[in-house]
Amino acid sequence: MSSTLLFSFVIGYFLVLLIVAYYTSRNSNNDSFFIGNRNSNWMLVAFGMIGTSLSGVTFVSVPGTVGSAGFNYFQVVIGNLAGYMIIAFVLLPLYYRLNLTSIYNYLHHRFGMVSYKTGAFFFIISRTLGATARLYLVINVLQIFILKEIGVSFGMTAFAILLMILLYTFEGGVKTIVFTDTLQTTFMLLGLVACIIYILNHVHYTDGVFAALNERGLSRIFNTEIDSSSYFLKNILGGMFITVAMTGLDQEMMQKNISVKKLSDSQKNMATFSITMLLVNFLFLFLGGALILFAESNGIKAAPDDLFPTIALNHMPTALSIIFIIGLISALFPSADGALTALTSSYCIDILGLKRREDIDEAGKKKIRLTVHFIFAIIFFIAVMAFKWIDNKSIIDVILKVAGFTYGPLLGLFAFGILTKRTINDRLSLYICLLAPLVIFGVEFVNNIAWYQQQFKLDMAVAEKIKGVSQAIFGSFKIGYELIIYNGALTFLGLLWISKKTSPAAN
Image 1 (cartoon, rainbow, N blue to C red):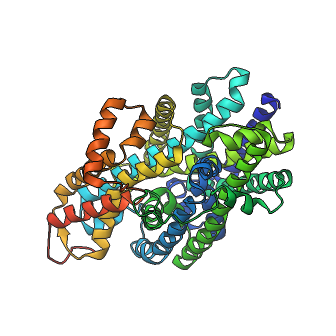
Image 2: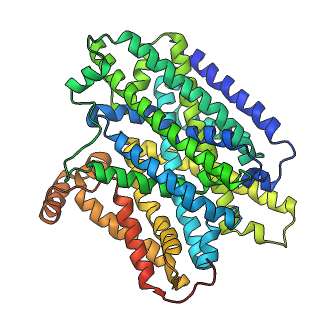
Image 3: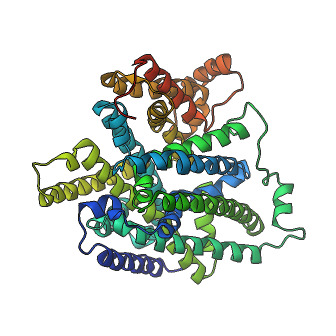
């Protein structure tokens, strides 16, 4: 179908977001940008967070995993549910009790300024890499299937989309995002359901889709091979701790939760959101299985991350192609706009100490905040171009692996603060948090050298030598998504080493 027509719908959708941003950002100030004046509706926050958590990676990459791993990813989703309960009943009460604008202020209360800035630093690194990886995936789909045909380069596409996001988040911040995320989640779920209905009506198997997937060994959820990287306990525990870290210790996600006025409403938000996420992720996996059967029936071949867009844009009616593009864009914006706003908030509050500065008036603070927001947009552009240069084929694996390294120190810091009453040598916390992921990276690199060789085209001879070392140390055991647990545990032990048994100054 016409690339120009699809592109016109992208522009039209963006104009709708600008209109929403205009009305929600009127009379906005720094507090509305950072935490929405603590007046957000919990139902809107819960619904909008679905779009933020799923992102373009879930929309495109999760269905693509079914071909190689069946429904194994649902193990991670089950772990996610347990993680959301920990957030609702352990972390949220803590954040509300301390009346935090930035959740990393907890580390300041508990340990000191260095730990506080260390936590914020790791969040900034983590969210920048995670958000730009998600952004790259969707921009790449738009580029391959729409904009390449009308002569627009990848760099220009990335620049234009980041400019769009910058325009509608520049003033309103969280106050605007709560509403735009709700709109975007609606369109994303509409795209998911519409595509499932179409595929089911055009895949004809006597015994049904699940029976056909079962025959091909693609419907299995639980992997019971203990040495496998996707062994069910590894994935469930990994999913739980990844959720605690990537949601509960993430300023972007918690910024929306603590924008709700009351703790009880914020907990309702988390409970509603977690159950909905369970159902929606299952639907994406089911869609992935149905897409494989559709591709098989019609002789379609595509890379895992390209399967859904290939079928939606080349083998579905025009109306569904449009719905897919709107759904994809709706998956793109929540993960990018929230990240851009949260990174601005964290840098201004945690690194620059803007809320503590009494020597700068409100207008001066706003000027600094807008400047930081613009600079992060430039950083996003550079990072997206770097992902294009690397050109990874399975972005969801990259994102979860990056999370294991960068959120691990955050997990260790918060766990040590909550689970112990010991004080640490605050000046040394940064070194512990840097050393732990470096050690774990070395171990994981050796253990999963085949993955790194495939993703980053490492020299085969060197990779084979490292593989021999790995087999001698680990045998057939492979580290999976539980990587974040090892990283957090090593950080915890390092903090224990630099701590002493005295009553903390703040708890």
